[in-house]
Image (cartoon, rainbow, N blue to C red; front, top):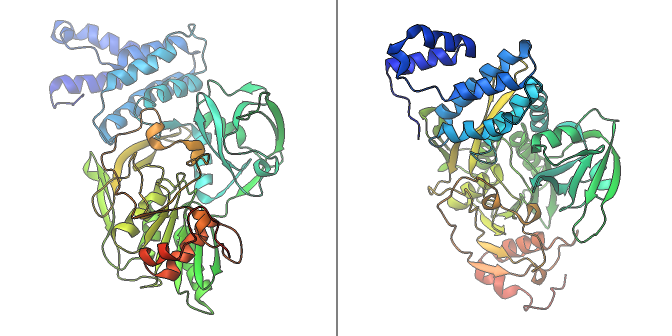
Length: 485
């Protein structure tokens, strides 16, 4: 692990790292024997290889300096101690095969620095200026695109879930579909950010995808037209005097939306119980997760961040105000519930405010900070801390365990195509296994609600009506026989 001591040698290295490569070399020569024994700055081979490989021009100096800026910030603020040489080696592996003066400066920098950052964890990476703007649009809940959540496996883009009433959903794309190419451009070799950038664009513009579907021998083509995707982050309904809040993601205004939904639902009759449905919720903004959890708490800790630097360590506690105090509450999770959704669930579970029902969540317990690198230079998305629940546990890799597990059928996917954080390459380690569930239930044993056939909602309603796990279990239909509505 590299640690930077305070010394004259360090000051010289800092000076050299801020100079163009040729100037640094000249300064070394001028200093003579005094500096001859100073080990070479590990960045020198990287920037030298970069300058050799890219086309000359004004951009070269901009991106050459960004190597030092990004790696210095990683070494200073990453959630764990960082050994720089392996990162630099990963970047060199991308650059060295290039012919001299053949690459575009921005493209070579992006590919090389992301190769380096990928060695840290799956969530740290560099975003160019366009991707940075797309990220902001996603947080606001509106963007031009196709309308699906995706991840990457074996170099291809995998559909995690299409969003209802979007081009992707109307074209019949399904969870598990693999995207092989965009407009005849192969996906293999792209980063996930690059692939998302290909799918996004101006509403009204067409795109053709080649799809590989599990269980089907042939690949097939799907033509779509991009639309403005306005993801509805929150929907609510009343089920038998129970308020059901379906929370799809933690966008920039979700805390206020939750508060308004409770007010609107309570305008005619106060709900007697509450279901917070976060199945499939991939997360979002940390501050909105804190606000949402605080909505249902009047005391206690919500979450704490534990990073390597003082600026990345803090905790949040609930204020005295609470919506629907004393009202029984169930949180629904599945294997695709991640990040901010897990934070909220863990806070409500640890404080005894809610019973968690469903399946063990995804297990993303890390926090990313978006660090701007300057006008049109993009941003660094850096993992700076792990979050810990009020009991001190982290959900990293292991997820939030349900109090009542809804047992999936053997062939049913766990969520996100059957993958969890622990399955991802370079996922940060976790240490805390959740407690085993207090009960396991086949969802088919719960009577379906009048408004539809969602088995998880049915089980949550039955549990809230029963008031206790033992009573709930006793009222279920016998195993192997479906419940009657």
